[in-house]
Image 1 (cartoon, helix red, strand yellow):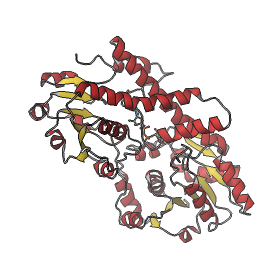
Image 2 (image 1 turned 90 degrees about the vertical axis):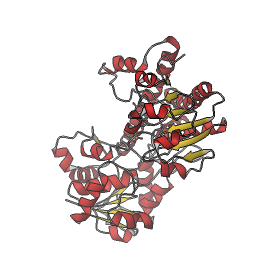
Image 3 (image 1 turned 45 degrees about the horizontal axis):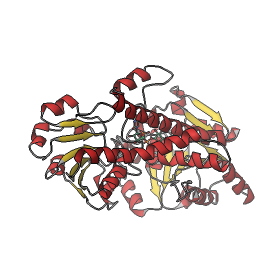
Image 4 (image 1 turned 180 degrees about the horizontal axis):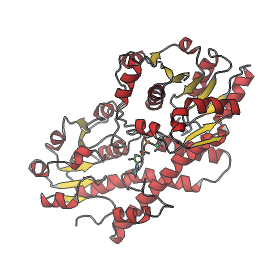
Length: 431
Ligand code: UDX
């Protein structure tokens, strides 16, 4: 087993560090946030991620993980994984400054034989530039690429049984990476070995393809509404074709999160800068942005002058506390600008939502609390809790018996049985 370091303890760095420890490595996680380091060292998970806390406690118990703010502590590692954020800048391009800073900081400390592995999602071509930068400084370290494909909400499971592990780099780096991931490879996980640029592009192109697939099914949902077809059956009928596949074919309020919006924009900008036509990708990005407006218009036209709404869901999807680029948040902001007064309930992401300080969007302590004083109910995130709403009780609280379910978590006939008018996407709505 090896001693490895992870720089950054966000959604990628913390999951990677803890799960590397779970397969037998000794890991040191570095972060600049003292509060995070203190919490993590005490075994407290700083992100909401299913099962992560259990693995964190095991790693601490088995003395396989430590948390520090000092790069001095990563002196004797064999590989350092760069897992810092690459947030989009005002021009939509990925801000790589945190990656560059952490690479330079690590290179000053670690031995020449240690490799620097870029796990953060970086614009294709970045690893090559980082390698040139190190060579210019006389550093002998090799830069490798190992993009992550973890999905928030299922990150632990995704680490343990990934569809594939992608390695980019020279022969020495590939051997080190193979050793690090050996327990997974021995269990039959497929690997793809390539150069750093192809490795970076596999990540961006995969995320962008999934985003295109989502914009496609969301536009088919619009068509279904016009011709009286049913988008769920459409998805089923399409998805049974193995060449299409049933995953990422569920229509919703648009795609969001800290990855798809950022990665699609980064790939689009890179293509444009290099004079390469990315019209398919650009159309998917544009379609998704327009969808938030479309969802707001749907809600506005149904609710008209009834401006007090119960909003169920703020997270960008169920299973996470993350509200970054959340479709729910985008639609909430558009509703507020249309004069709606909102009470927001989310079982997990409410604290993160409230940090956004959106006017006329006040927190509710429970689903029922959100409905008190509300005219109608709007579901924006597919939390399991919302599928079990006590409709009989809620029917007595809301003034308009209207449910607008943009995630299709409630059964239409259930809603109608309790006297609600039920509206959703991709199907013929109530008259
Ligand atoms: C994504 C990629 O899936 C993952 O491989 C990569 O490492 C990080 O980015 P994540 O952002 O966690 O993961 O979320 P994901 O589950 O992919 O969902 C992205 C968005 O698409 C969410 O807003 C989700 O609600 C939406 N979505 C997803 C749909 O609307 N319909 C679907 O069928 C699937």
